[in-house]
Image 1 (cartoon, rainbow, N blue to C red):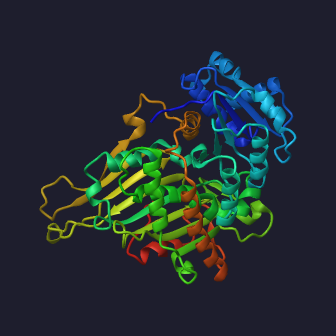
Image 2 (cartoon, rainbow, N blue to C red; image 1 turned 90 degrees about the vertical axis):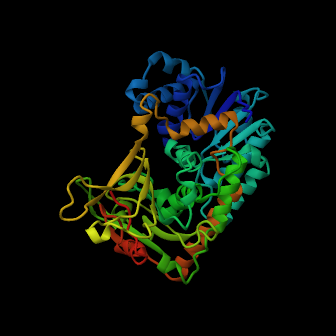
Length: 487
């Protein structure tokens, strides 16, 4: 693929938490490693009343706070800060965009825009960019979530963007796709002959995707209570992971081929009907409990008012195509769970006949675990014989074959997901971004489940902070003869 780097980058929301924790450190990392185009300028914008000097001081403070100690080279930080400028802007009105365009200057060398703003401001912001000449053919725009709260609002945002930017210029961001281990799913599946022949309903009993958080609201009360676990995590991150696991082999490693196969999976998700929603989904809300030995308050106590927002969701999903017919995909995510971990556990079917049973040997089905965070590894659980003379029978034990990415690639620096995504936005590689038809297929499936919750008056079940969610989530898998993979 021919990469076409732009000469200028514009960051909306440049004083926000995301910019401080992720965007500025990521851009610095690219700068420090010589990966940013020579002469690339970075213009930040937000409502905050900064000038160039005060924003550079703000950026330096963010880097001092969030950069790892081994990356804090004062000379390199100083050279990075020189790239940065700032223009205050109220994106809700069109008046300030001319000054923003003047600040950015000539964009004939290309402009990339990272747009992180409230959904209510999308249309006004897009119109403002157009009015100021910041939306030409050599401009590409990256859109940070939330991109709506249902299919209708997502379509409204996408329509507003499409009035000014075509699909090839639009880069919808899901930061999970920038994680190295997520990208390794493709290498694992399509770079090895070992797995692909059994990567189907004939070889796999079930697939489990878990994204567990130990934190509570953490200052996001306003957003989270209007969103909940389903829209915050399942609609984007979890369905993207499901699509990567379930997709057919793409013909090529490029944005069109990979996203074509992902959207086929998303469109093949069996709709969960109003009648089936109570049986195929579980919602929960955490109460007080203990996480990592610390007593924590319940969700309603943190929020300081009652709420019916779910902080936990478990779903039994099915992909209705030839490859996956009959294989359930179990999705689980929640806050205030016992451990912070994101992983995919693929449980293969048992061997058709055990020759060890008569000698007392007990077999477990093989399981492939792809851990995304906090550790990054691929682990295959296989059966092995315990050492001994076997006078009292054959003793078998499940043992792990581990590929630790941190160990195997110890000489390679582990990058923030946004480093990859920002560089791809600057260079114009769409492979790890989400296409409009993917987003809308995801929302359509999620909206159907939420309609079932409303029709059945489903309320979140209570679970103690520090537990793995409501007991009904255990039943969701166990009635199929499966169990959640918990370390």
